[in-house]
Every structure is written in C-alpha cells, then in structure tokens.
Image (cartoon, rainbow, N blue to C red; front, side):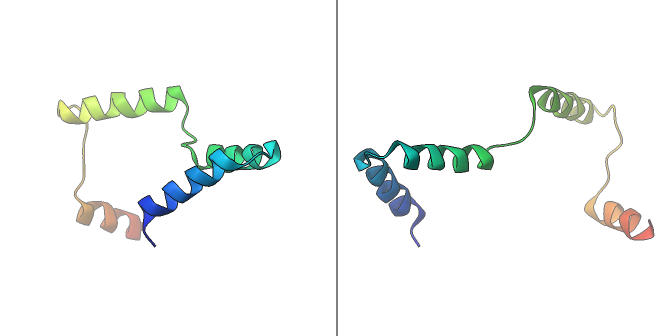
Length: 72
C-alpha cells in the first residue's frame, strides 16, 4: 500500500462528501490517534532531556537497562 496515495485518495473523498456525520467520525478517529500527552508531560520530558544533555542525570545503555529490567 502506498501511504501517500492512500492519503490523497482519502483527502479527495473527504472533499467530496456531503455527509457531516462522516466528517465527524473521521475527526473522532483522527483525534484518538493524536498524542495523549499533556503540555505538562512535554515540559517534564523537556526538563529531563536538558538534564541528560547537561550530564546532570544518570543514563543507561540498552544492555544495562535490559539487565536491570530482567532482574526485577
């Protein structure tokens, strides 16, 4: 399936529909697909990223993280 072609076909179908109910259903599906993170979540992530980049927090390699998880 060609993703871009599928998107274009769906856009054309949306432009041609006259049924508001269809548009409402599409909107609901697309809104469900959006990130569920709040602005506060993004702020926490940004703060943690800054601390990591400034070497102010501990980080783990994938191997270390995996070992720790398997020990739990």
